[in-house]
Every structure is written in structure tokens, then in C-alpha cells.
Length: 255
Image (cartoon, rainbow, N blue to C red; front, side, top):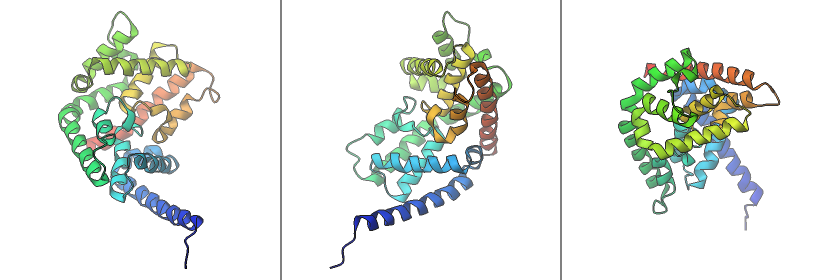
């Protein structure tokens, strides 16, 4: 009787994972050219591998559902599944009743489209203008004057993105602001500009932006060992963020 050894099974799985990864590289190059260019292939492949791993946690193992999951990572950040900004995704992915992965993927697609139609698309033009402004001016210029930093950030985001802010609600926005404050403290940023940068990156790139492989340039820019001077790191990250937003905006404006 012929027996398939575990190492043969592992080798077979690895072969198909590598084949899928290569296919995804070509897919992302074609459909997300600006983001792929900004990432580069090494970080892009890390995103794909992370996506395969995370999708499997939710029972998504077939080619189509996994590809869609990875596309969502590029749209909303690699850790969108646990991000307070995307409750629609978390609800579907953690729904115990959607045991069939095709059904789960279909529900996720429907929830995404509802979110895009109701929140993102109506505000897209305005958001582009805001992001363009951020690339041309100081981040702190977009903070409304208020009694304290948290109130300033809250008023700033309510003004810049009213629909998305209304969708999330004030309690969630405050939690995101506090998350950004904690990140700023962790990375040694004590200035308003450093904290504002952390909040903008959280809001645009997702709550896990600092460890997201598609933003490898952020992780390198945050590295205190590479550059101990907090002011220089803030300036460098601000400049690179502007360049990245420029790449993304170029792609958006062509759609």
C-alpha cells in the first residue's frame, strides 16, 4: 500500500502556496500598480504571505476568497480584520454561522460594497482634497484649536471626514486618537506634530500601520536605533508619507 508521508504533504502544500504567491504578485502588479510600486516586491510578498496566514484563521483557504482577503488588506490595511474602523469586516469574519468560506467571502464582499457606497465614495473627492492638502502643508495645520490635544484631533477629523466620522462615532474616534497617542509615546514622539502624524497614519493606513508589511518604509522610519533623533524621524516620515500619498492619489485620480 502506498503511503503519503507528512513531508510529502508539506512539500505539496508549499509548492502550491508558492505558485499562488507568484500569481498574486502578478495580480497585484496589474490591479494595484501604484501601491505595488510603493511597496516593492519584497514587502509585497510579505503582505501576500501574511494574507494567506490571516485568511486561514477565518476558514478562507480557497484561491478566490484568499485573493479577495489580500485585496482588502491593500484597500484597508493588512490588519483590517481587527481594526475598529472596519466593524463591517470584523462582524462577517467572526460570524460563526457563515461556516462555508464562499458564503463568508460573498457576505464580506457585500458588506464592503455597502461601506464603500455609503461612506467612502460620497466622501472620496473631499478626502482626496484633504490628503492633497496634507502633502502640501504642515500636518498640525489641520488640527482645530481646542482645549486639549484629543479634542483638537477629534474636531480635525470631524471636519476633514464627516461621513466616515459619523459612521465610526465619537467613542471609536476617541479610541483611535488614544491609540495614536500611545504609539507616539512608544516611538518617542512627544510633539504635537509627531502625535498628529501617528493619528493620520492610523486613520489612512489602519490601526496596525506601524507593523504592516505594505508600509515597510514606516517601520524603518520609526526605528529608534537607526535614527535616535525623534525630530528627524518625524520629518523623514512626514516627507515619505507625502510621497506615498502622492503615489496613491495618482492611482485614485486615474480611476
